[in-house]
Image (cartoon, rainbow, N blue to C red; front, side, top):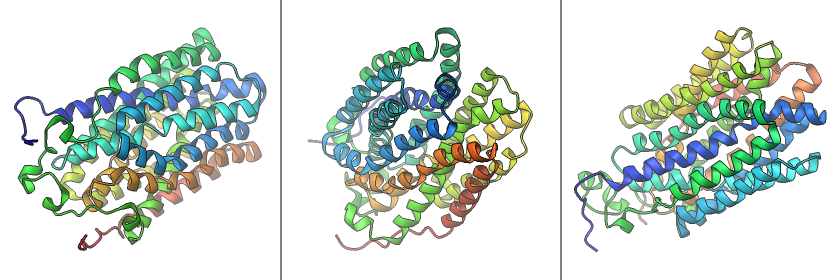
Length: 411
């Protein structure tokens, strides 16, 4: 096949747009668990630790499946991966409307929903990475900005649905929306530019060919990648980052309502985290193309760490909104960088598999949401949990200083 860039809109931007919509819908409703949190605790008289535990099970399983998801996506492509996502998540949210016991919550949300969401983020980011050499950080930033838009729009929507229809009917509505939005959009995805007779965006400017050897990057296998010290530094950075983010996404709304802020206002505070993360994903993703990935990563993590300490004293709505804006910007900026770094330093042939193993750091982070809920049950405050999260983020920012591209060895 003659690979040439064709006139008109490069199809890679269609991939970016489709990925944006998929991540917006799936992750927007996923982060709405924090909106349902009080309803679940209140109706069944469950402790925060108990309800948080189901979220931790989801997070652990979700991240544990990433190596498998990476291999599946590398072999079968994003359309099959996203089909599994739609089937499992729509079924899981429908089943959530029927739960009555803790074991059902853990099975349905932790296992079914947790398995389904595993087949979204990695397939989208790995696919976008393959379509771009030039402007890779920008493209990834735009795609993953969907998560932020989803959180900003769908967290308040979930609160509205609960107030109008109750939490059970709301979960049924969400199940239907996932099915009718994500399934058709996911059909636009293609794993490699070659499927459309194209080259990755910008590859001609750096070498003129279609493989990484011409761009100065050798394709590492998963086994070769995990032997590199930098891989494990990235692993720990990701684990610390995920623990802090997931703790906030689950507990921020209840933290706000605990000090007297109304539920809808608290839901919009959580939504602002998502909205600000959109700016962070695009801005820091783009900046990383200019100043370097590790510098951008460190800046984003430091912003998050500082705001975790600010949250300790937040009591007024404006203080929570300020937290959400700055923390969200930093959190969003971190999201596209691991996929971009892997593409830059380890190549794209096994990108999904390498990113999948890297994402196992989220398994370690899974204790974070449960820990925060348990700490509140014991002490009546989230302060200790937020201090631990801040310390981890400062440590992650320091680890960024140790990042260094692996030496390119003969294949």
